[in-house]
Image 1 (cartoon, helix red, strand yellow):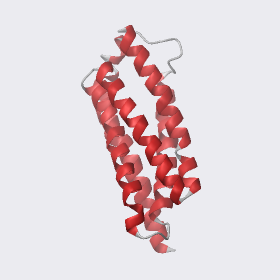
Image 2 (cartoon, rainbow, N blue to C red; image 1 turned 90 degrees about the vertical axis):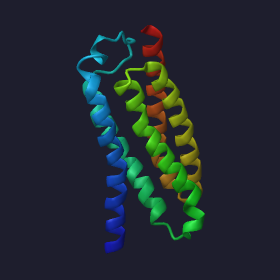
Image 3 (cartoon, one colour; image 1 turned 135 degrees about the vertical axis):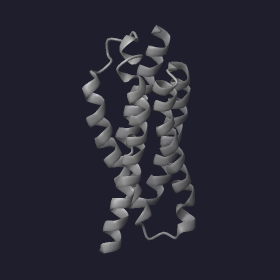
Image 4 (cartoon, helix red, strand yellow; image 1 turned 90 degrees about the horizontal axis):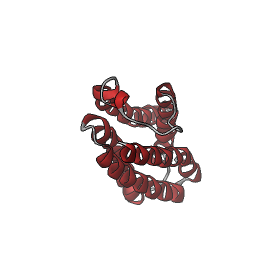
Length: 157
């Protein structure tokens, strides 16, 4: 029981750390460069992003926990975990490209690669634990929406 609790906390910390690192890149230009961008009418208010991402990072962390705590041998978890950490890194890189580099074009490239990595992670997680795969669906949907938003911002500016 204690090991599972440690694994749960570890999984949540790993997942939430992507958001914390990404927030550092976001804050750099949120109040300056980003404010001046032309945005489409369907752009949510800025206050929406933080709570949505927090919920998503918790769901992602729970999915990771389900994979890490499964009874499968580590060899069977290697590919799903490599995919998880690839999408984790890409999740951190998107705000770096978009906000820190102030490049909606590179942000769009990054978010498309991120979306593909999420889909593969979801597929591999589902093979090990169906709930883990399902927990990644809101993440994939939000990133798909963010990709559309990113594309429009790129094209409008």
